[in-house]
Length: 154
Image (cartoon, rainbow, N blue to C red):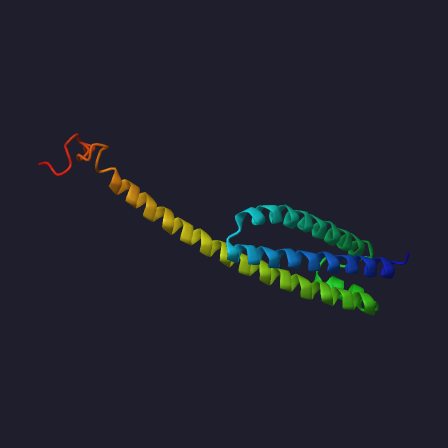
């Protein structure tokens, strides 16, 4: 198989993997909105597996690029694709799908941070309420303060 054919196949594989990854991120977003923690935990493994697949594909692409004497950056990739129109089209799709996945990931991060902030606020309210509740003992009488005095006494 020629280098161009191998590159075409690899980029098509990367497109498919990125498409699946974007779908996972979209599903994650829907679960975050619903607050479905159980499903999120199951999806986390799928997301990890897909991330590992994408990493392996990208590493193979970098190896091919380096083996052909090109820089391991966008400029090196552009030079490598100059005479490979099918590969160039697949690469454009890779970039488009990567941008989509990045946007889903950014939005999911915002949703996670928002939920975390609300949970921290709720926890602070509960802790403050629990702290006030400790002012009285089980018998309903004021508890002793840290210096041994009954609360409200002089």
